[in-house]
Image (cartoon, rainbow, N blue to C red):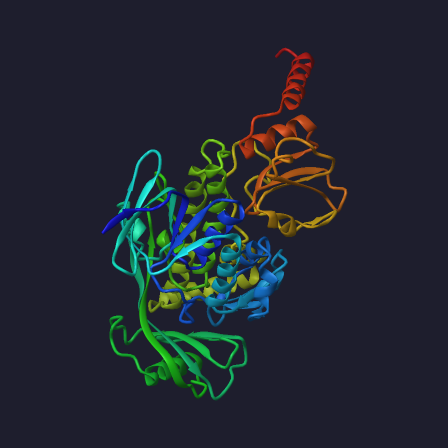
Amino acid sequence: MNGTATHRPVIVVGSGPTGLLLAGDLAAAGVTVTLVEKRPRKISNLSRAFGVHARTLEQLDARGLADELLTTGDTITGLRLFRRLSLDLSTLPSRFPFLLITPQYEVERLLERRAREAGVEFEYESEVVGLRQDDEGVDLDVRGADGAVVTRRAAYVVGADGHRSAVREAIGLDFPGVSVIKSLILADVRLAEKPEGVLTVNGRGDAFAMIASFGDGWYRVMGWNRRNEVSDDAPLDLDEVKEITRRALGADYGMHDARWLSRFHSDERQAPHYRVGRVFLAGDAAHIHSPAGGQGMNTGLQDAANLSWKLAAAVQGRAPEGLLDSYEAERHPVGRAVLRSSGGLVRLARARNPLLRAARALVSAFVDMAPPVQREALGRITGIGYAYPAPRGAHRLTGTRVPDVALKDGRLYEALRGGRFVLITPGAYEGPGVREGWLTVERWASDRRTTVLVRPDGYVAWAAEGADAAGTEEAVARHLGQALSAGADRRRGARVVERRRTSRPC
């Protein structure tokens, strides 16, 4: 039986970390949002992600969640990619100069709580079976647990429903790519002997293994054996897990009592577009890649942080022209870069060819010796090194990530918790955006004279040295999608006249 449900400004499909953060941001901004999830209501402890990088922690800090998440796991300041290649995370220019080792379900738990408190409407056991869109909105056919199909109308739909995305298929987008690892194993076990570190990882010969702690006596083991690459549905027992671990790590730590055993393969794929009309893709629905570097969940959360404030502005009628298009323009290149970096690490780790093994040794040595190269690698893996394209002639800071700078009344990522733009200025400001509640105005803790307009996702929208009031108001109005007030118009006009008076003929 078909029916039609109430119109919603935004429907998000998929309640993994990406969908939860996105839906929570929209609801916190005052947008009515429904989150549709195929699974029953349950946060699974079988998720694959185990590492939360610095940039993700910064985004969670901007939502008041980072400090609580830190209590759920342990941190490491050294990230070893090969036996001879390690990266020093303690040098990161961030409040979080480390990798947090905590299971994905802890991230989901906090994000789900926030989404519920903000008013997100959850629909579990609801499967997308059809989608149509026109210039005014999107019709989404959703089949519930009772088998009935209901058509839901939304202004926008976001597919955050994983690598088998029903939304992506419904809008006709391909998902081109290749399998980079044909056979990976996962197991949750107990250990008779505790490993020395929070994260134990190494590759030796034809085997690779990683052991991470859940913090409650259970451990996640992931590994592969290049000599035994089989299909995902091939039987897996604990003896095979032990063998791979011994070959890669030199010991199996007396693992026993496996509560979960699974095989999977790792693909490297990316959708050609992240937007088709009023439908967007984010997270694994848009891109998937190898687990090398632990960038999967983190990249998806950055997608959500980039898209959420733009969708909120569009729904509320205050989006500047081209704002929604900027989501794909900014995030698609990042997704492509993550595919290349994670895929490159896997190919080097699995290298059989003597030339590739020599290249791996050279990369390891060069990164260890060259600080600029190490900073570049750290920036890519942790997410803090990515910047977005800036218009020609823009200030050098435009498009860059803003660290958690000190403000007169606190720090930046506390100021970002309102989900608004933040204007950091050396002087007073009472122009566009303040009265409407779309802008937070802060002062530098130092005597710095740069004026910086920070987007809700923590990137620089605009900056200037020694900006006057009219120029600042104009920039704020442009980025917030507002018309200048009459007073601001007059001041801008006076500035133009003054420039004409003082100009000289060529």
